[in-house]
Image (tube, rainbow, N blue to C red; front, side, top):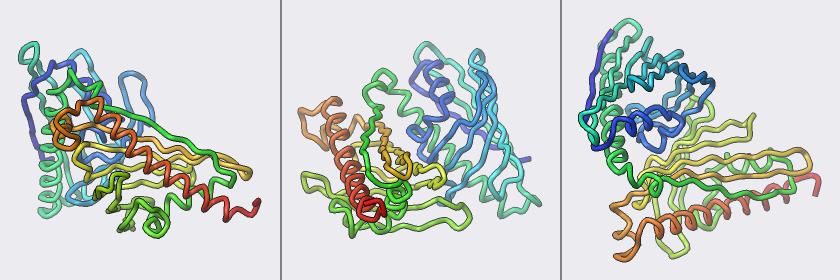
Length: 315
């Protein structure tokens, strides 16, 4: 077994820091490497998770068990099905109060690789070090603004009814490489799919907002065709956001569908006046982001509606 240790001081109470770590489903908003976390089971102490994250520029997926001890502010984890080249990975999150408003956060990893090949050990050590530094650094930044979290973190959704089967709507959303020819606000889109992880797409996109400004974003998407669901995390965001996640959901039957676009966002407080002007505040930033993201997703759903309804044999 090989061990890595990472730690940092956080300008926030220990309870706040522990709460952010305990809420793993929200990690894609707080931890740069995490793309998606889904809770499979939870009994209040033991938790079963499915996770997708980037490691050394690659997308990896695995399942983990966690044991949460809120009293000790300690969380132990074990990868149930480890992502190659790992053969085993366990670890511990530990939060210790330094005083009423400061904490020490420690992250331990113990891992092994098949055959203990040096190049595989080095790969895992490099990925673990890079991701742990990014996770602890960003958590310290967000937790340090804990008094503003309710204003910095936001979520919202838009919904549209479509008179066509859900498969046609889902196809439009999944085949994003066609969007530059179909969506006015998308000027460029490069999409690649990971042959080792079916349904995982890496996407780079240029969009134009209503005020004419251009933005380049990069995203990882995970597609679930059988569920009519596409989840994504922007790995490169516009300046006003430190994190942006989303979910496309299509439900219905042969006679019609409902498509929903849901967004999760963490605003970057230090960018508000730089992006929106000297008099702007977080409330203005929330309105701006809600309008901009909602406008683009609604436009995408409207084009998906037209595509699906024109292709539907029922019409």
